[in-house]
Image (cartoon, rainbow, N blue to C red):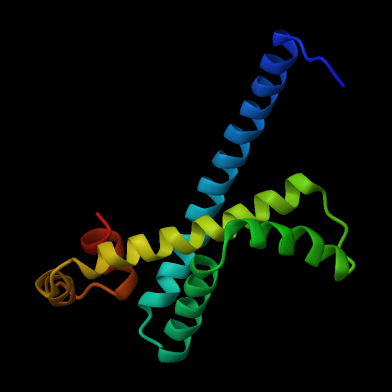
Length: 137
């Protein structure tokens, strides 16, 4: 039986805290970038693209994160892609966060009244300009 001193426990907790903060930052930043791209794809009003993004969101929101972590690490290994546990965790957490951020932001955009969209169109703004100057702020 191993005896751990109080210092051993605190040292390991501090080491884990660093990894937790690092992976959280990677997941939030990466998830924000991927989520913004997915939001733009979903707002393009192309039915097949909207369904594809909705399927992505439902897949990642509907399955447990632990299962996704296992599938990312071991599944990439089965496909012949050699990854480190940190890379697999970063990739999985980024995809997971992007699904939630996409849906949160889609709800925010859907809450903008139709008059705001029409005001942007009346100013002869393109779709991207409407999003940039009217809808997203």
